[in-house]
Length: 578
Image 1 (cartoon, rainbow, N blue to C red):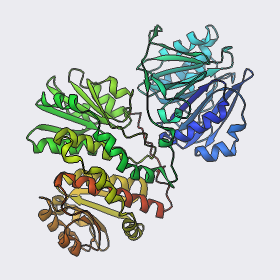
Image 2 (image 1 turned 30 degrees about the horizontal axis):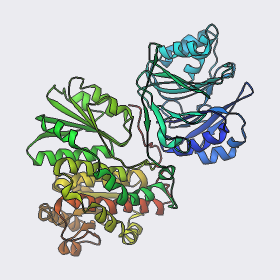
Image 3 (image 1 turned 60 degrees about the vertical axis):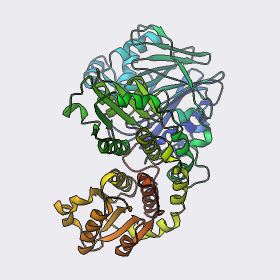
Image 4 (image 1 turned 135 degrees about the vertical axis):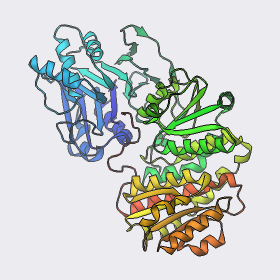
């Protein structure tokens, strides 16, 4: 889940790398570093900490040179310290490498290299790669040495490497099971883990495929397959503006992206789902695989399909290979905002003979190459680690697949109405910020929304939070409801209300502090606090009305507690390792 950026061209590499790393910080932010090549010499600066503080303390942008690589880290191997930060260098300090992924055979390689005299300065698996390239460079030219080293690796990797011994000042790239995208500029080339880091310089990109290697120079790029033969890869153009990946006057990306929902929901509703609906109609069984927030969208899709009498089930992607064996007549739907979620990709590979459909936000991502058809969210880049606008966009796609667009025309106006409740939500946040536990309850199709709201609380407030179908309270959870414990009830006036009302009373009788999101007067009377939703809504729209104020609630509790909601501890946005 690390962020990689590379640059070669006429520009000041250190500035471009630093700017790019700030845009990639959602992928990892426990340490950061850059390496720049100038006059045939490498200079490396790195340390633990976030991009802004480290780049300022080490004066990244004072480094000269027009070629470089940068890295923001989310630790998977080795503790968080300066030595384990990237870039890593070889024994001669002439080769620098940044890596995202896990080298599964690093122990064997490290023993082999140590026996050959190599000295290691970190505890990471990544460092073995740069020493392996160094070893092979003793007898082979740079590209051959790089390819030979990559051929020895087992596991996942996105790699960018440069060598002071390379007179052409090129970047060497490789990827397997971890994303890496080339940015094609005018007289300059870039690479990065994700497109937003390069939007300032180009809107033309090449997504490297599984096993690809590449070289970047001032004159262009070449891509090679895993067998070393040169191949052609399709260029893609995105219409994202650089401003989409900036805060635009908001204090945090998360708040901006919550407010963006009123605009991007229309873009999502405009997405073509014709091919996806035809595919879904052909198969009797549908397996839906996803992780995190996307799993909650998958649960909603499964729920709506089940209500139609369809055989559909949502699975946590990381467990899917262990609990099911999909057949040829099973449609497998993978949902991933980034299109690079390692667990989802691996689950799709677990169903080699099954037809596959993807729902993603990212053109050219890995998931699009594993499936028969893709539906795009059209949400623009999402930078905040906690998903907001991409979740409502996923819901919009799910609902369009089931109901068509006709019933969803009022969504932009509805979301705008719910955003207008922010001041009311802020007052409730004041009451919840000091709590240690929060419980969410709902019924029916509102349960996935409760799960998602609870996840937002866990992610960015660090308050212990759980969500349950209301009927499950009496089967264990009521033992945790004591005086003053918040119970947030998703209680719209639909066919679940009568039963949920009983659960609300159960929780209140045990001293629970009832916070409701509702359009029902009786529920409001039973509540200590309530967030209103518009009356007279078509019941199918309730999930959208419920989630927006609960996103705002989590955001404002986070801010009140002094937490940066864009950068929750221990989390990264795009989970690209299993």
